[in-house]
Image (cartoon, rainbow, N blue to C red):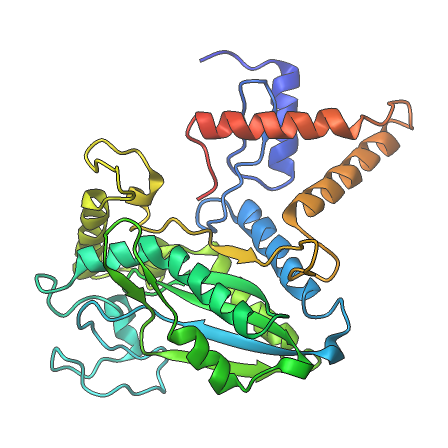
Amino acid sequence: MAERTPEDSAARAAILARGCSTPVKTATGVWVRCGSRIKSKCESCAELYRGDWAAIARSGVFDGAVADFRFYLLTLTAPSFGRVHRVPRDGGQRVGVCGCGVEHSAGDAGLRGVPLDGGAYDYAGQVAWNRDAGLLWDRTRRRMRDRWDSFEYFIVREWQDRGVLHVHAIIRIARFEAPSPDVLRDAARTATAVSRVDAGVLVEWGVQARCDAFRADGDGAKTIWYLSKALNYVLKDVASASGDAPVDVWRHQVALGDAARRMRCSRDCQPQDCVSLVHKRYGSRSQVVSASRRTKNRTGWSFTDLTRTVQRRLRREWWESRLREEAGDAAPAPSAAPLEDLAARSRRELIARGWSAP
């Protein structure tokens, strides 16, 4: 391993001082943040990621003529792939007797989502649904836009305890064509898609769905805070959050990982040779969070066209201004174009070396 120069150590220390616990050095010699969104891996980068997306979510609720729109919080779930333990979320909640014959308490949180019978559980079906969930949302989005032309969205995909994705979406529709929450929920829940990998297999949402209307000046901030909590966690974080997770939790995760390893991620995939990260993510290929984009004829989700690229540029400009102030304006302001090129090149190198934000 090459010895670090004083300049190299100083550059790494600067990244550490800004909070990243595991900075990465690219082949060009540039130290960059690890970029992880997972709180247990890097709290600083995960909080930066969460804050960026929370700001984008707010910009589509508060930064426009909100009186002209209606807002909804839509939740869509996956189908059942087998019976799981029923465990309450808090001490005061009751869910009745579980299928295992025991009435669980909140202290049994580690069993939440674990199959009653792992041998009968449809692990292959679950990881395949995770794989095709992005396609299903795309078909859902198209159906909604066909019915309500002003439809825009901000979506967060969250892991349920059983290891399957479900969707929370903030929906914005112009008031003059806005439907009731029940109509919107049913239109979304009944959307379907046909898998591109498993020919003829129908992909659909589960029967549990919910849609609530909210006011921007009422529950807008609370709704955005609720969604932002889901941005920093993956299934392993959820499973281990309760402390000493039962061995059945880890068996469940191993079975999910094995099913994902055997699953085809595309029509031409040979699972035993495929290096796609889909096989390591329980089938998921979707981004955790996304929002509708601005086009020639559409506003997109953000009224101000706020994106993470814009946020990174603003942070970089702020950081450079501080460096110039500390240098007494002796150093000339660097050109934005070379910096953009350097950032893009560094990102490509990270991907080529196997580094990526989970």
